[in-house]
Image (tube, rainbow, N blue to C red; front, side, top):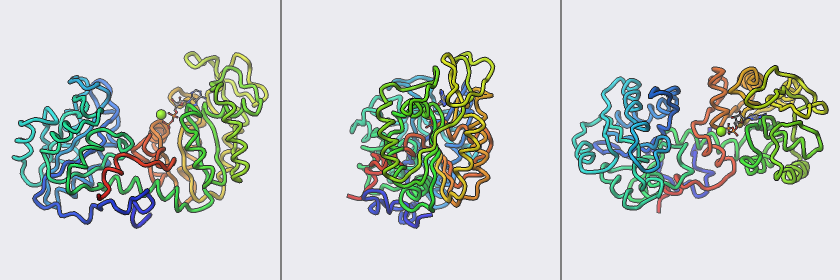
Length: 407
Ligand code: ADP
Ligand code: MG
């Protein structure tokens, strides 16, 4: 791990470290990412809550009171009970084995009063920030209202750092002391290590829905990796670029030329792009019917490739031999629909057991696939940020980190 996780972030050396701050008797505004998956009012995966528990506990031990704030879903600037954070506050209480106070708004006199009355070490969760339009509009007024509940700002919301919203951008700028939290340190360190100090050789495994989502990620990885293995829907645009007929598989027709260019550029960068040899096909996305394995040259016209085939799984496994860093983003197929999850599961298992020094998975769906297979422990880092993790790979500046810089 990097000693200073922000060393490689553009200008990042100027971000105040958690260890430098005296939190005693201070009220902390802790921006977290509690945007958890929920079904019928029940949390289906509490990883994002669990992952900030260490930060909260450390703040408690250091004598602070903690006010947690997050967005949740897309209530579009209006109060919508469907998107209340109350169940999250309850779950946090269970994880901390302590009472957690829930404030039914994020701003206003009542909330400020509740904040002031908190005893040292206690924790409060504010209602969904997105119940106010000002959050997504990055409103200065909303940020000013939010700032009144605390003395110090801590950002531990890696998954939200790529968005210039009020609690991420405008708000920290209003505080004298603004700090990166423990989760943020961990996420930035893991992603920076891959990009700037990888154990070589590095092999990237990319999949998922669209080439267009991942162009910059591919370009960026190409320079650092010896190979990029490409599966998932994305691979069909590349195969089309090589004149392979792919039946009715998902192809981005307007990105075929771009795929050709990426194939060329990879050659120049001495990075091998490894594409699938065979596929598990179905009749259609919604009604796949009986799975049928087809080699590249034999995908039927009316058939849609929904997973990588067994020969490709073997090829990909062989291509990972000797890798010391593996970065994975994007499932190899439609993993939500068994049996088309097989390629993804086999790759997850193989990478999970691989002896590479660094194994990182990032991306909403790929992380969900790894969790579904119960293989998180096989990775050195499982990122809690989907889009944010990819932006780190792209090497772009993130609003959340920019706003933490000392001025
Ligand atoms: P991540 O969130 O990990 O970055 P993406 O969002 O790019 O991944 O892609 C995930 C989606 O891609 C999943 O919903 C999956 O069903 C879909 N997908 C993967 N392979 C295929 C395929 N062959 N055909 C259609 N959809 C696919
Ligand atoms: Mg996704």
